[in-house]
Image (cartoon, rainbow, N blue to C red):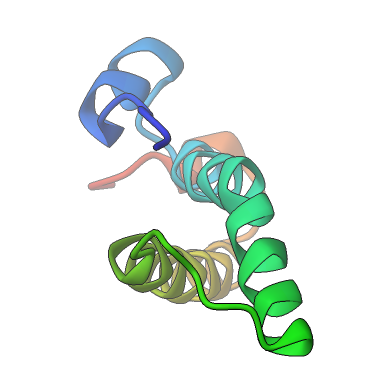
Length: 88
């Protein structure tokens, strides 16, 4: 299973901006795309999955929700780095 650093670790190293949050969640989705493909293939072929990926699927759903929310916030604030600092 994927071992990604916490978002706090990521933000501490890359800065606490909307763009950094979005990149974190996009990275998670990219690293777990193989699971979605694996599940889709299993459904298509009628194969039973030995592993339970429900936690990953829930996290992927949450990551997509966060990306949409943060992207909307970014579009409202503009792309100026000063405007995208979290908490300002």
